[in-house]
Image (cartoon, rainbow, N blue to C red; front, side, top):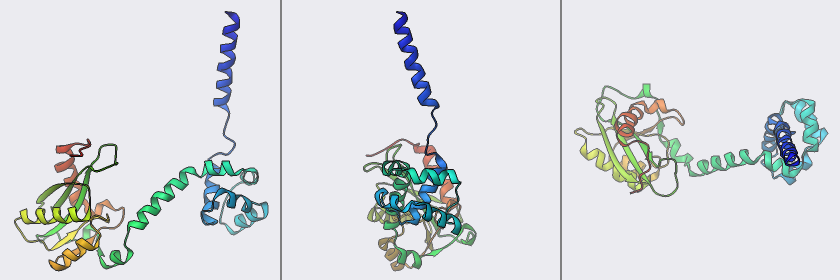
Length: 247
């Protein structure tokens, strides 16, 4: 019995030692390695490793491209390709997501559509409509799920919503037409965010054919769409909640 207790205590000590052991390649090494990865054009670990020489690292420090201590340089000289892959795993995933978003955007169409802040929108005229999508996907964005198209007139506060499955361009256009038909006044301007469900050729041609001004908010500036963002909370989220609906 005493021997068993000793064995258990030895195992516990080993576990504690493993927990207390600090990482050799800490966050400072990871941050410097990420900068080097971007400098060398996002190369793989096998191509990046030969560039991590003392001469190259000192040149980059001298030019101000990287800023790190001598200890970090010594660690980067010893680092192996599997360790490079492990430290850059998160950065690569982020870069993949960013590239997917960039591929979706249409720079020529974005240049055609005027950007306006909330202060530049005419609040004294009926028919200036802010638009946005509210996703009802819960914690899972996979597959098709219900979305609400929110349309708000910034002068009167009139709100119209249209439910749809997904945020496809054709479905968004159909929802815009239905919301427009229900409003008791004429539309003069459409002002969505920068999502590809709104910034696309289908909706742009529709605005031209209907002689509607088409403007957009600045990227990642929700205050430019503050009227519809407020309605998203008071008229959609509080009524429907945050659960997933896929029928």
